[in-house]
Length: 120
Image (cartoon, rainbow, N blue to C red; front, side):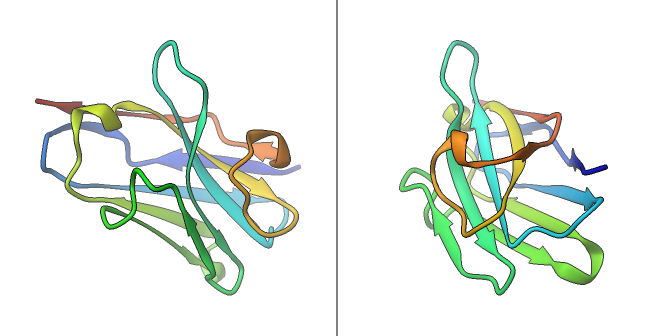
């Protein structure tokens, strides 16, 4: 049974940092992605990484967010720096059989999400 479990969300002031983790169990996936969903908005791609650490980012987070993974620990990370109030959302990790894409529909498995709130 495949499970993805996010952790590390919380409340932070603007300009601060958070690191999210996503622990995967059940199988290993070549591609992993991070998405976020703010209230009343569609889920949007944040960043993704392949098994061999090729990266893909949304333009809105380039230079502020970093995706990484530790394959030995079956864990993917999202380091978020210089956070802004508009980064407030529920953050999800997701698994894809191939390389990461920006489309929600391409991902097969999802975590339950973790709330990130950035205060101004």
